[in-house]
Image (cartoon, rainbow, N blue to C red; front, side, top):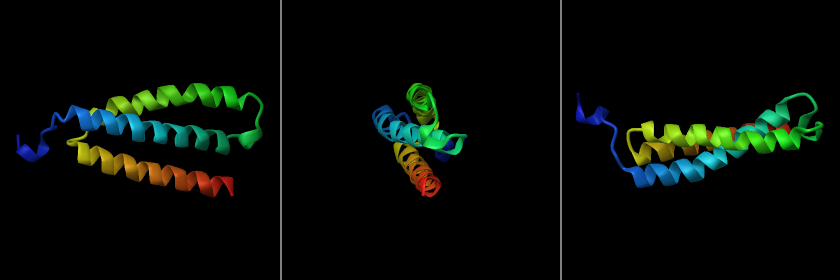
Length: 94
């Protein structure tokens, strides 16, 4: 196996990045899901559903942040996904 293909064990950076950027991405995805479903942001019972969906999405992203090859790779991918998600959310809300 080539050294470029090995997953580096920089747990601290992956944990921090997965926690912070993963939470931000979970908020964006949960809000995007709420905005594009029928009723929009004003739909009945959507606040409760949105609140409970953040944690599973966040934990899914957080757990997969350890599969990136390095902390820098995790940061670049999650930053890009955050920018994309928040851009889509802003486009949907306008």
